Amino acid sequence: MTERTLHYEKEMLFLNSKLVEFVDSVEDLFEKTLYAVRSGDEKIITEIEQMDDYFDELDLTIQSTAFDVIAKYQPLAEDLRFVVAMIGLSIDLERIADECVNIAQLSRQVQRSLETFSSWQTLNQMIRIISVMLQQTVDAVKHKDLDLAIKVWKRDDEVDTLHNQGHDALIELACHETNPRMMRVYLEEAFLIRHLERIADHLTNICEKLYFVETGEQLKKIMRSKQ
Image (cartoon, rainbow, N blue to C red; front, top):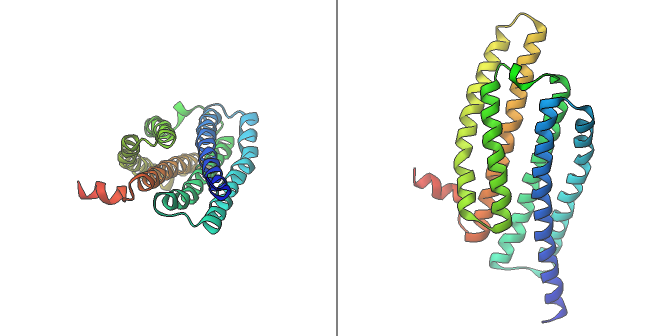
């Protein structure tokens, strides 16, 4: 094995290790974010805000390494798919982190238990589904499990339906509300639901990219053709 090949394999392993670090860290961040929403704990909210730089740096490290690998080694076939997908995977993970920061900052304004939300049932259902989607996405990435990736992909429609129902209902309430304080409450809930829906979208994107890396096929196209 040549020195060039050794360096190439080392960089590919480094990319994979950074991807695993990213998904694990995002999972931890999401759990902290849910706690922040439920508790309004200022210490946790500040901690989440400060973690934003860490995720930005992870994203930059993965993207710069991926571009370096392409420039220096011109990978082919499966390796090229992996390296290119790493760039997209990193972007989606970084955007999930951004959404978590947005939710945490919003929880600073909310400062009340979730059970008092007008959209409590919708919000609770979305949190339960997205928590499962996130765990399955982490496992799918770590173990290259395409069955799990497909399960995550299928659940995105459930989140979209809940988001549309909850968001529309809250906007309707806000439009007919005369009390400025309650109008703000409804809008805060609508923003929270929107941020959660975006997390589900990014998880779905990650699973599509994972499927493409492993098979060279578009998961969305395959699944839509079966409907």
